[in-house]
Figure (tube, rainbow, N blue to C red):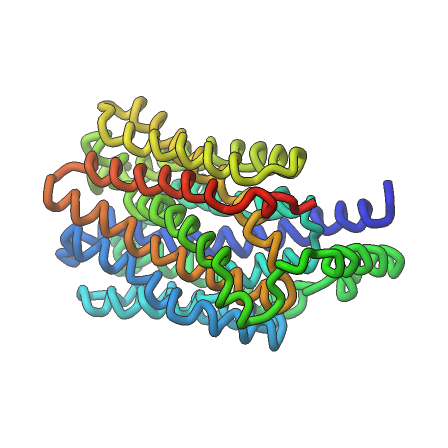
Length: 430
């Protein structure tokens, strides 16, 4: 094994699990409102439209501050800025326990998005400073399995917290927000001491490993084609960055439509939308199944994409399969067919993520990487506002999830077709 390979193996063991944990907490704090809604909507008198607007408004605050946040991150360093992000979002997330009205719900969800802006692209930017391009889809997929693992563990945990309804004078949904929000504050403090931003800062690498991996990354950067985007202006003016932002838009449409509405979709399939006699806990456990299936596929597809060096077709075929399964989830009947369709939908959706971000980061470098990633993520995450609101509006209008899931599936499949429009030479990220 070469020195570089040894260094990368250590990075996968030491860096990725920590980043994985941070993203589990991040994603759980985004989507736990979906489980809270099982009790909160009835307790506060929220309609489907009120709930979906509040759930989705997170992404408006997120999008507005995403690019400025990543510019600051590139200037002051990932460690300091990610710690700040985590501490503030943890406090806001826990503060959701004080919601008593729709306006307060909207304000706190907006502030949560504003607080978290820059976290995900900041982590992706950090990974570009550690992993060469041919290793990147595997690394990103390993980190982003946190999305699906958060669903696996978050469902049962959230369901269990809802059973605390009435304990200490708090509703179950209030316990959910405070217990799942505060870990972000603790981890934010730990980040200040435990997150090395680049190989030269990692105490667990030998000096030879630090130098070899840094040299490999520098050689790769210097060998990049002339089309590689290296500046803020270049990232903002790049047609490829904006095209990939359009592709990525379709992913959060589906991801957060699923995250915010899956508990209620499963509740409808079981004949129990909310509450009592362990129903909330059972819904939490059932909701973990699609995420568990997705976790396996996400890693397998990411590794295969790295092995072959191909990105676009891995993204496209995953999107088309996932889109079709979303549509199927709206027409099948019974809990077993519903869980099966939702599992395939999550499998296709999650399998897009590793190849997509490896592809997107293959032609941006320097501060252009921080800004380009922020552009793709911030524009794309507008889809996080659109998806839940499609489901909410259609459900309230038709009293069914069928048409909403079909629309979300069509949008996801369209993203798969759109990525094929990117020029073939952009696949060459070896």
